[in-house]
Image (cartoon, rainbow, N blue to C red; front, side, top):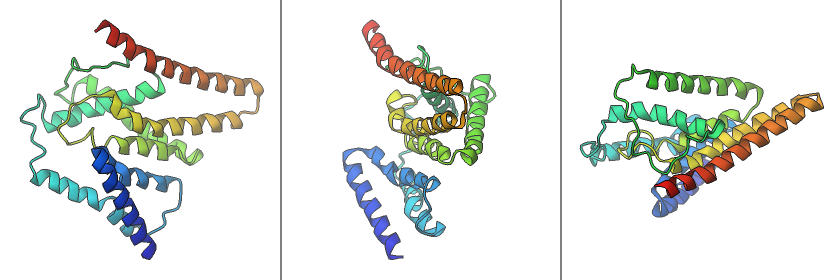
Length: 231
């Protein structure tokens, strides 16, 4: 019990100090909770719930009572925001795992707002997202730790990609969450490399990993510069 109190106080203090510098530090307890996929939980489920999730319930109640969910000044409703964030989250994942020249931009003012969940433009990303999560859970049984990276990614998007009436789409929101998917990708390539018994296959895995890394870094650095130049 004493360890739990100390742990909770330290996390609370660090989070409070972080919020003074940037509001997104409020996600720290949630991000820390994803570590339980890698390490044994040092306290009970009830204690973990109080430390990591009860503060967010209080925060949601506070946001509602302070009328911070007012969408009157936005071009979209809460339901439309949640609808579109499913598509945008999948776009973030695509940029990391299979980037292309059209993925990156400085501005998304021309984003095509979806209003109907029956559109294929929503259904396809939603199915891909569900499949991605299911596949991550399955792979985690073979390669422990993969699910941690995936949960870290989604936890990192909780603040700016859910109910708060912010702008829909910004690439900088993906910077911290992307570390989770990068971590999972490294684990998968590491496992595949050492599971392969032939040198040829190992070289192919190594070349694929390096190619994807170089492609991502190239597009990440050159495309925004090009967009900025032509604009």
